[in-house]
Length: 167
Ligand code: S3P
Image 1 (tube, rainbow, N blue to C red):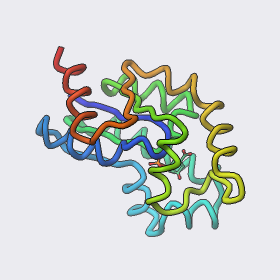
Image 2: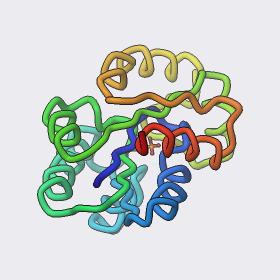
Image 3: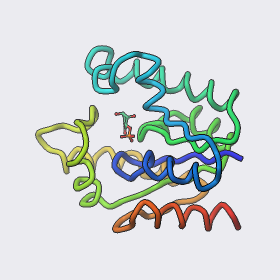
């Protein structure tokens, strides 16, 4: 059994993924964390030094490796993983893909507490979030299930997911 969490930044994929993995006694794998370990630098540094295309190629290679070599995992993915049709196909075959969603206000609140995000312009956070989210909405919707996270605790989101995957 594998579960894949997709969704926009700030929807809680990593924190939900960790708790979901322990609830299901599966391993937890986070693509951004693995990329940072492989590259020996932060995601922001990779974007700054090499650009987005480089990051996307590393991300796609990692998705190929994970989906061909791992089993029994909850996989949290970076928000842009759905851009690649190869990634979408591999992930759909690998496991149950669940997209976490949140409204713009909730995303902004959550991002305030975290580090800077490469694809979001500092000058117009709301505008650039709306633009990127609009571009990706249909791609996130290709997931088998979707869970709204607005106003929910991590445990509540995990409970929603458990109800979906256990039926
Ligand atoms: C990205 C989201 C980030 C990270 C990178 C690009 C995106 O992951 O992969 O900064 O394009 O949406 P999170 O969704 O975990 O923040």
